[in-house]
Figure 1 (tube, rainbow, N blue to C red):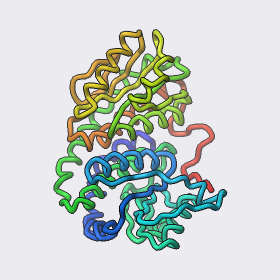
Figure 2: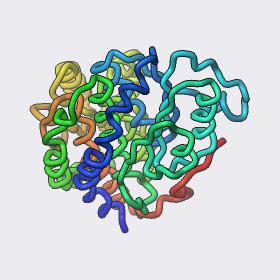
Figure 3: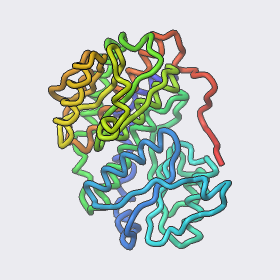
Figure 4: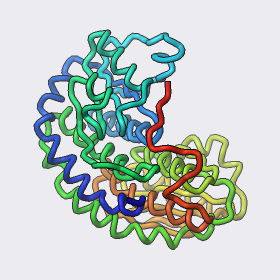
Length: 336
C-alpha cells in the first residue's frame, strides 16, 4: 500500500475513530477530574498531534498542556514530579521505550494515564488506564498520514469528553475530510516554485502550529528540503530576515482569530518577492493557493492534513525522490 492509498483512507479512518471510542469518553472525564494540567509524551508526527492538543485543550478546555522531555525519564534518569498531572502518551506504534517509560513513571507516581495509539495492546497501551484506539489499520507507508489525522481526531474527541460534551460536536467532520481528500490533488499544481529549492520556512499560528510542524516534517523526510517551521509571531522576531526575492515561504492562513495576521504576513512576504504557497479555507493571498474545506477553526488542522501530505508527496516526485521509500527511515523508531 502506498502513501497515496493511505491519504485516501483518511475519511474512513476519522469515522472509525469517532465510532469506536464513544464508550471510552465517559471514563475520560472521570480520569481527568482531579488533574490541574496535562503532560504529553510523544515523538515525531505524534509530537505534532501533541502541539494540536496544547492549543485545543488550552483554548476549549482551559487546560494547561505541556510536552514532556522523554530524556528525563530515560538516559538522564531524572523524572520530574507529575503531581496533579494527567499524563498522556501519543504514539502510532506504542512501542518507543522512552515514551512508554513516561507513562510507566506516571503510574508509579499514582497519576492518571491515557494512551492514544494505533496498537492498544502495545507496551504503551498496556501501561495506560484508558486507551484511545486510532483505528487506522496497518499503515505501511513510512511517512505517517492516516495515523496523524486519526491522532488529531482523537485529540478533538477528547476535548469534547473533557468538557462533558457529546460527540455530536464533531458531526460533519467525516464529510469534511472526504472533501479535503478530494481537494488535495490541487496541491500538486503548487510545487513548481520549490523543485530546486534547498530551504524554506513554514509559517502559521494558533491551532495550525501543529500543521506547520507536520508540513515541515513531511517535506524534510520525503523531499530532503530543509524546512523550518515558525509561529508567525516568532518568525517576525528575527527569522524573517532570511526572506529575499524567490525565497519559498509556506503559510497556513485559515478563517478565525489568526486570519488577519496571517494574510497580512503573506502579503508582506510577497511584497519582499518571496514565493508563497498558502493553505486556506477562504480568501488569502499567495503565489499559489491550496484550498481546504471550511470548518470550525479548531478543527481546521484535521482537514488541512491531506493537503500538506499531498503537497509533500508531489514535491518529492518532482524532485526525483520516491515518497514511499524515504532514505534512512523505518516505520517504527525506538528511542530511549
